[in-house]
Image (cartoon, rainbow, N blue to C red):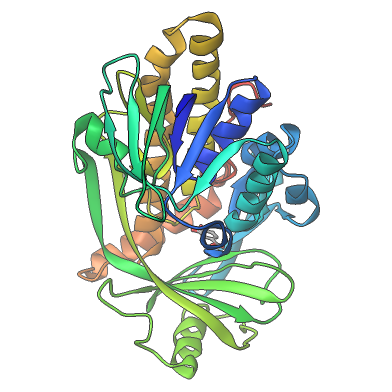
Length: 390
Ligand code: DHB
């Protein structure tokens, strides 16, 4: 088959790109190896920057983000037995929305299907061919093993951290990366929220994040050994571990119905584009989860790229596509820094000395006591402005 833009991956990046292109009258095909049900039920991130919410709501991708999602005007930074509020409204003049990623995906998939646009579930892309030609191709197989070749003007790899599109650009593992000596143990439980806002806690036992999903369901994480399995602790041990890490707050407990371990790393691919193949989202970069930048960064990539592809396809002007990697990388590295900084400041390093621990508390105190410090955190957390979305 032939299309203008072949998109690999029906995650936030691929689905939003297709939506923005469709609004410009540009046809695309999305393929994803997963089923619709898998995509719509996998629990991922939950925090959307203000700019992300504006893109979703103003372009008709999601109305529910404003009705079902809830606005958060600050977070609670906890350390040394104290709680400190970072007031986003007072410092950055912006906010974030708590709206689970899979809900945003449901909205985007529904919009795509309602528009009668092409989206193919259960289709696994195997490779991208001829990136340097003006007819690059995605070579794929469908759920029954039948081959499918999609020829396009542009191929976009929105296929996550194990991207096959990346392999056609510069080799799958080529890029700048950093590992961390810890992971997050995540749970979902049936309980009311334990606090009004999210709590990011640095404790002597390690980091914990008390997040939320809805009035009835809460999401919580604690720092754990990256080798730990999700069944390492029973329910009572999970609550003891979590509670010990948020002194001063009494967690409201309830049945734990999902648990997972998230490994984390920082990564930026060495090239975001080769010829007529471009990478966006996790295919281009991975951030550690602290600070919730992953999905938001994918949205920022796609806002830039959709404009660039429109100029190329409608006006024959490739200047914006040529500029895309450099422009996208400016934000990507700011987000890499913020995610690394939040991670480093809040987690217990396994080899930490007494000096390291006390320096970290000094850093946290510097941030919460300084208006400039609180403002930096708030600006980065709520998201730097997106082009064309103010
Ligand atoms: C969530 C995840 C994050 O990484 C974060 O910084 C805040 C919230 C969440 O899943 O709720």
